[in-house]
Length: 252
Ligand code: ADP
Ligand code: MG
Image 1 (tube, rainbow, N blue to C red):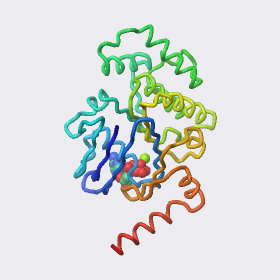
Image 2 (cartoon, rainbow, N blue to C red):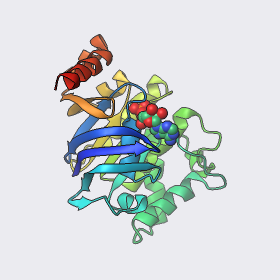
Image 3 (tube, rainbow, N blue to C red):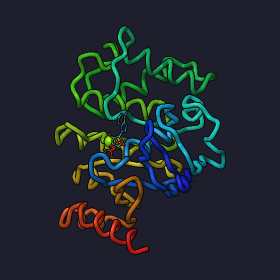
Image 4 (spheres, helix red, strand yellow):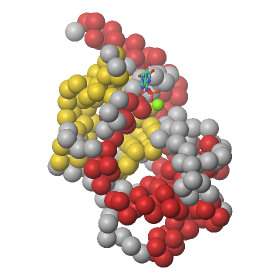
């Protein structure tokens, strides 16, 4: 579904991604673990096609099609979804109107506002958000957890194929993590979906049960494996991996 091949990218003059390779197939859930500032969010931005980040080498293929000349909205139409680490406020636009407009933009044939409202209410219930939430201005005055829940509700409403979730757990309480995990598990019962999850939360990892775990450091994937890598990081931290990698680079 998603193939990231040797992607290099820079922000202004600084090279941040130094050759990322990752293949994500339908039904897979990939967790990216890595220290702050290692380039995880930059990878998400490059996948999204944020013009502030300049991809200097490599290729991104999504469902057999290159992302190269595709605008962010075209990538979204193809089924790629990205959650913001800090979701923006959208003054004057209610959650309901925002999501309905986004849904119609992705699928012009979608016109059933009844079906839309029912689906959205169900999703919000699963996330323990009150029904009145749909009439509030998007993210205005929302708590951190509420913003993250709205991001999750967008993912479900827009029915994306592949989602990059950037620290959806940051700053939220344990019950919210559980509700987000549950919503994510439900999303993934459709085996045509896949997720890349950037997280620091052991609890969320436990909830979603990843098929693949990657240690990300210094702009690249240093090691890939399964859930055992989470334990390894819990005991030894990231430093050991990053140091080992840099000494290997010096040797080669
Ligand atoms: P992570 O998500 O792993 O914490 P980021 O991708 O956010 O890391 O950042 C990687 C590096 O790129 C950091 O050194 C960060 O300061 C820099 N960077 C990324 N985006 C920006 C930006 N918009 N403005 C300034 N620096 C940025
Ligand atoms: Mg980040």
